[in-house]
Structure formats: structure tokens, C-alpha cells
Amino acid sequence: MVYLAVALFIVTFIFVIWQPKGLSIGWSALGGAILALIFHVVSFQDVISVTKIVWDATFAFVAIIITSTILDKIGFFEWAALKMARAANGDGRKVFLYVILLGAMVSAFFANDGAALILTPIVLEKVKLLKFDMKKMIPFIMASGFIADTTSLPLIVSNLVNIVSADYFHIGFLTYLAHMVVPDLFSLGASILALYLFFRKDIPKGYNPSDLSDPSSAIAHQGMFKASWVILSILLIGYILTELLHIPVSSVAGVIAIVFLVAGGSTKVIQPWKVIKEAPWAIVVFSIGMYVVVYGLRNAGLTTLLGHAIQGATHGGLFAGTMAMGFIAAILSSTMNNMPTVMIDALAIHSTTATGVMQHMLAYANVIGCDLGPKITPIGSLATLLWLHVLGKRGISISWGRYLRTGIVLTTPTLFVTLFGLYVWSVVIK
View 1 (cartoon, rainbow, N blue to C red):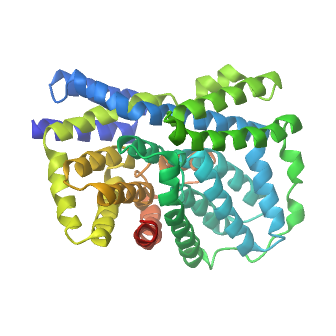
View 2: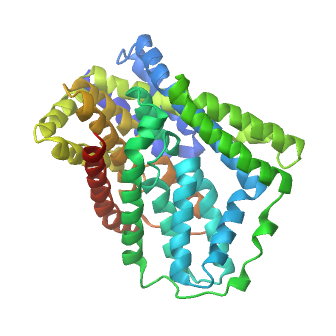
View 3: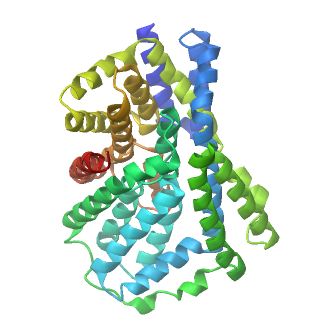
């Protein structure tokens, strides 16, 4: 049973990452889940249990990506990028900082995958307009990819990992925000410092702002652009109400996505059915299928073994437990992707005797490890894989060796600082 569960997980994971002949990650995960059922590694009841855990997260994610896509069509993100580039007023270091801050904001409100898919090509296009050579472009390219994950902590909707974990441990939107907004600021500060120190010699000292077009030229429809600010404000209020009214996050994200689809269609900014068709529906099948395979590891007792290791770390107190959980999650995420890791760790945490503050601290540390840890390797998160895919389509190749050298140096101190911030903030607010 143990060997079969592990073998199924490894084979499924290889196909998800490899994607032979363009095979969708959804089909790979579904195939693994079906094999797990056939070989009785999991039961139909396990499938139902997994579906109950991940349905809200996956549909919320799809809705957020739809909203992000429409905003991109409106010119919302390009307008923001041009605004920041012009605000830097020709200062290369300042525009580098502004790119990081813009990435942090997009990641927080529109998910890390949205930042990787939408912001990366915009940043790439703008640095080309500024006539930067490849050496000067690399800091901006790497920063946009790195910040997409490291600052995807503050809101439940900032990362699919966050939604899954919050749903599993029944953590509401406001409660999650209260605990994670400060660690996210620690992560942002550490990310800015790490990125600057690593790339300081390659960041251009200056550029000509006149090479950039006027921000207003990026807006495809003024009416939709103005309306989007109102709709996004309503979206944020809706997220807050999810905890107070005990309703799923996906219901609010879904309604707002529909509003944007209707508005975008009526103004001819988008073709609604095309946007719906191109939405990442494969992630729904992937989430359920991959977590069914992970449940096989649970049934084989492997998550309980991990739970014993976590339990042992908690004996050293809140700080030791937080650090151990965060780094365990980071190492697992970097080696086998953060999507299966967050569920494996959640099941392991659940198997421990930790309750109350300790259990929630382990859950938050798990989220931090699963959000930041993937930056160590190219396979750590779907956002990184999407980012590499976007770059590849534009003729830019980041080798595994270069990525690993950069990822380890940037991620390790940022992860430590962020976990430390979580611990300090938990002591303050408890």
C-alpha cells in the first residue's frame, strides 16, 4: 500500500511537470486519481472529502483569473505600469523598486498566477521600450517572477495555496488578513532588499522617460476603466463579508467575474465566451485529482509520519514550531510543487495534537513555506512554470542552473525573515 501510494504520486507528479506533448495538468492529475481508485489506494468517499476541501479554492481561483484577464484587456495593469515608470522620473533604481511594488499589489489582489501571466509580459515590454540590454533586463524579469510568489500572502485570494489552507482549517477572510498582512510586509521588505543586493550591479542607473507612452493611451475603454475601480472596491467589501456571513470566497469572486464579463461584453472590450473558454478550468480537475492522489499518501500513513516530525518540533515552543513548519513546507514545495505540499502538510498538521494558537501558527507557517519555498526551484509552483512559459514564448530562456543559484540565495533569507515576522506578530496580537 505504501509503495503503491508513493509510486502513484511520483508518476502523477512527473506527468504534471513534464506535460508530454502538451498534456494538460488536469488530465495528468485525473489519471493519477483514477489509478488510485482502481488500485484501492483511495475510496470514493475520499474523492468526496477532497472535493469538499478544494472546490471553493479552485472556483475562486478561476474567477480571479477571469477578472484579471478582463482588467488586462481594459489596459488596467499596463496603465499602472506606465504610471509607476513615469513616476520614477528616469531613476533606474527607483523604477526597479516600483516594479516590485506593482508586482506585490497585483499578486495580493489578483493572485500570484495572475501576476505571473499578466504583469511579466507588461514589464518585459516596457523595459524593451526603455532600450535596456539583456543584462539590464534580467533584474526586472527575475524580480517580477520572484515577487509574484513572495508577496502572495496577505489575502486568502492571493494564492490558491492560501485558499486551500484557509478552507481546510476554517480560517475566515478577516482572521487570515489580521494574521498574515504583517508577515507579508516582512516578506516584501526582505524581498526588496534581497533583490536589490543580488542585482544591484546590473540595475540601470537611469533611462529616458520620454521613451514611454502616456499612461492614458493604455486604456482601451474609459468607461470600463472607471467602472473597474468601483467593481473592485465592491469585490474587496464582498471578501470581508464572506467571513461575517459565512459564505464561500468563490461566490463573491464568481459574481464579480460575471459582472466584469457582462460589462466587458456590452462595451465590446472582450468576447465573454472566449474569456470563459480560455480560463484555467484545468486547475479545477488538477486540484481534485492531485489531492485525491495525496489522500492516498494519507491513507498509507505517510502524512502521519510527517505529523510526528512536526509534533516533535512544536515541543520547542511556538518559535521552533513556526520555523520548522515553514522550512519543511518550503523544502517539500521546492522539490514536489506547492500544490500537493500544502495538502500533505495540512493533513500532517491535522494528525498532530496541536490545537488553538499552535495549530493555527503551523497552518500559517505552512502557507508561508508553500508560497515562498517554490522560488528555490523552477518546478516549485504553477506561477513559476507559467512565468517561465511566458518568457519562453518571448524568446527568453532562464536555465535551471541560473534559476537555482538565484532562487536559493534570494529565498532562504526572505523565508526566514517572513517566518520571524509571523512569530513576532503572533506574539503581539495574541
